[in-house]
Length: 178
Ligand code: PRP
Image (cartoon, rainbow, N blue to C red; front, side, top):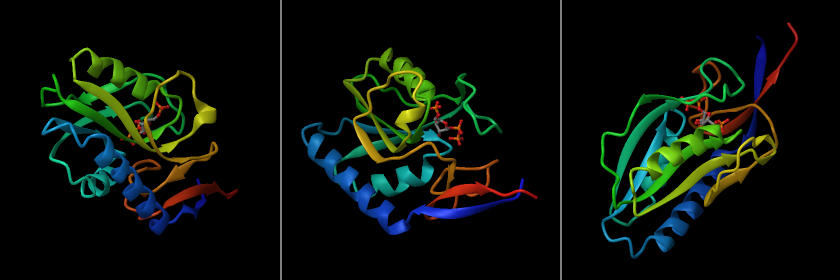
């Protein structure tokens, strides 16, 4: 489908907000010792994670998990698939799930419940983007970068059919009649 992309959140705005989130985490976990672990939900969160973790000066580990709920659709299927589970043990660790976007909430609700069963010392969520109007299931999110209206966005890790993840800004996809 023909479409154009309009800048919605600039590279500079993202940088400032990511730095502020990292500062909050640095403050909140200053007594966590070496127990802090960031769990990056792939694929969408890889750029956010990379920028965020480089502003966290506390000792921490970074682990990855690949999940998918959208596939090639622009709407959430509501079913969460674990494509690759965590390779690390999170028991007694202070875990922060790093996510690019929370939309219906199904993905994070499912992943949070799953990880809670593994007995971390604490478990919080850090999302770059929140679309509160789309929520279908309640999830407590401690760290939120930007709260936005229901618009289809790409860039900074977010895709449209696996494209545009590399954009340094977040853009709105504007579909045009052919
Ligand atoms: C996106 C995003 C979240 C999820 C949010 O993942 O990264 O994980 O959807 O939607 P929800 O709140 O409605 O569950 P996607 O399935 O598109 O995979 P990706 O990260 O590989 O792009």
